Length: 277
Image (cartoon, rainbow, N blue to C red; front, side, top):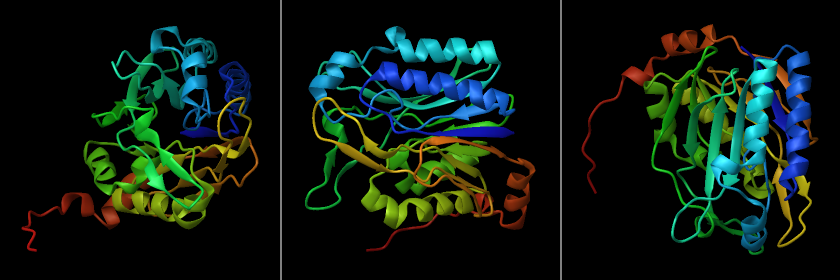
């Protein structure tokens, strides 16, 4: 499976971010990639709920989603839109942080709403309350594709190892972790967590990331860690994209999944236990 990871510095203008994704689809196709993967909140990086209400759309009306589906079909390429911020019909007005896996025919093969909300204070000056603007999902998703069985997750999910174990035991060979990671936690934890998830599951972990200082027209500015990563099932880092935006193409040998799990078959070694406190 030849994959292309798009490392982005998305703005809060969906139309500009769409141009970046469409150009990447063409570039990835020219490089022989079979799947393009984009980061979390590909369409809009913003912490302003007012701005989000103005520019975000419902899934059925989202122009970026429609355009990428058309481009995927035209190019015969699978596309993981790492996530889009989209409107919902929830009474409280919260958005969904939704990952879409689009087939090479332009169909939505699977979708996943981020389960774990990033409600943290990472420093005295950097606080996030994702649940104030986004409603959490409640379903884990593995998608059978012509290329691989893909388990869908998003960013902060990576701190919850049981989700990844469940996806692997449900058949996932590739785990996607699109992200918009904080530079503070990214420096400390990004690579370690992704390598751990790969080692524990014997899966490829593919994590396309947002990077840099994001242009915003309203609200607080945002900076992200970058370093899109691909980790092999045995834990080796196969790709670290650094901090510059751009496209990175890599070949994944899915035979390595069975090889790693054969060497350490821990996915078959669960045992019941009693917790004593």
